[in-house]
Length: 114
Length: 109
Image (tube, each protein chain N blue to C red):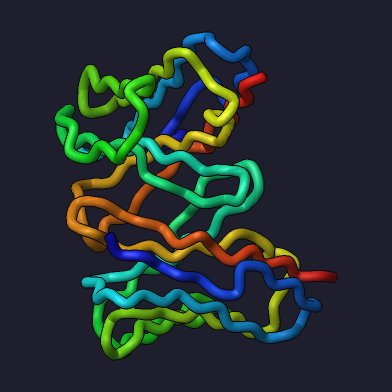
């Protein structure tokens, strides 16, 4: 059973399009995240939700809008895609927030904007 | 914002050799974690260290948390090709888990 699953795994799209990435976790965790990993493998947090409430929003452009319909799901919608949005986007979850929690990552969604 | 600096950025060594990679910060962390990421996959937790000076072993991997809880090291004994991957250290900054930029390790057979 996949603990954190995200779809699609690969996405190639043109500049200006709008796309969504879906994420679900079956671990019963309270906290979910979106991370972006660039071409240099730097993993940077974008958003974090705890029990459906947004708790972290790192200086991410307004074109990125997360939505958490329930605590098991955290989707990411991106408007007006730009070339610089090309990256691997990882969904993740943890039992709670803060120090010492294990973060469980999905396999990543590889977004290429052309 | 706390920063985690990892060194070296890249390391390529022969199978059977020993190596150490480092994670350093100017800030104190209540805990540090090490993750390994293999190509095409998400990072997976290897260990969490909590107490200053703590040493944890995971088979051929030895993790140490600095006495001042500002740094950590990962030592691999007799490296194997299966150890190849991106090693990331991570620490908590409030509710946020931040990651270092990683050490990309390649073990040559």
